[in-house]
Image 1 (tube, rainbow over the protein chains, first blue to last red):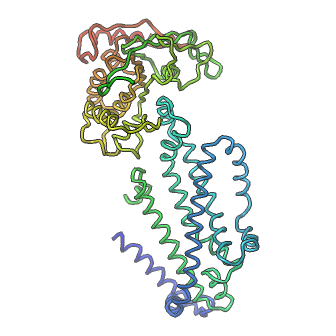
Image 2 (tube, helix red, strand yellow):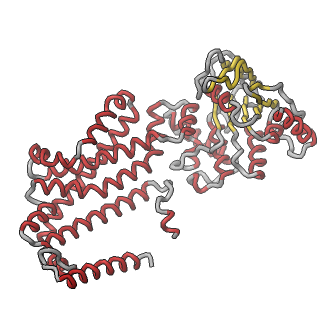
Image 3 (cartoon, rainbow over the protein chains, first blue to last red):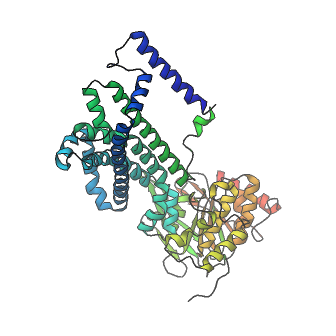
Length: 253
Length: 253
């Protein structure tokens, strides 16, 4: 039943979509039905695969860089008081700038290739990852810190052996969010200026009224996002077996 | 080089004196000119209602709270107490990501000491003495509340400190588990200078060589009640029961 339920939901949604297209007699270039999208998907499989490869590479490299940089920044902020005093403000103010507004600039600086998209993805991921881990590092159980102090632990040892492992579940939530938003970063980057990728393909399909191809690209992108999130989630659960199960409550009802 | 010490053996004992202790909270004095003496190699129990400042007094000795002048904490041998105190709290404070054995070895990990075979044998020996042989590789989540507090007791003893400070260590346990753990603690802590802060008059009378009631606003510490016989005393010992009445009267006064 647990496997069947999402399939039924999906089938009903697709049927409704097809019914709307038939009943409203919408032309194909406004809203193609699911069958037309499936046909476009099959017809353009090679093209989609090529562009999907570019976008996937941008997402994965951007995700890795964003998580690494965000994690390192949070540890620096939590571990070094001077860094916290001087950089916290910079970090918060930098978030007041909408990252999307930087996309044209990134293309100007880094070119039409993958570098500007990777930078965009990294930027969009950096802040949620940093704040998630930094918050986790600040919220260590006070009793553990007391215990570490009476045991004669140095600040660095406490950070490394107590605060960091204790913050990993919070860090994991940040990485989950990052996995969910990473595709957005890559596609925005591609929209602003590129010669390859699913975002590029969607923009061109839209301009040429190939709305079925646009939907097919969107479908591939959605499949990426869902797969990436599920994989990340499964990986983090396996890596942190001690953390309380965040899905416990919806499994019960 | 120091000689080989059998698991959980007590180091040379030392007395501790807190004198002229003063604590103000929000402008009002919680206590002033308070004196508490922990006799060497004896269990001193401090009993009193919540919010009277027992825990603060314990934290002062542990070096976890800054003493307010003119408070002084001195050891009987005149040397500083830093590094000679082990701390056990009401929560077990086990690290959920570490195995039971690694939790017992936490102090060594935090101080960056080498995990020598002797050290590991020592930790295993202590786990056996608290009745957890064979559970070394389990995670704390797999243990019951009583078993977790046993691990915490083993971790405290692993520190080989002459002074042991316990802040309501058994108050979260059910009655039977509590009685068993009290017996185990009395046996294993013999020879150390212990301060046991508790709400439970029976616990204080079973385990304490000397029992003080801390009451009032600002708080004062009453003269020591010295139950006859050696701890752990039986919970149905007539003198224990009689003194329990006396102690309750003092607490209510």
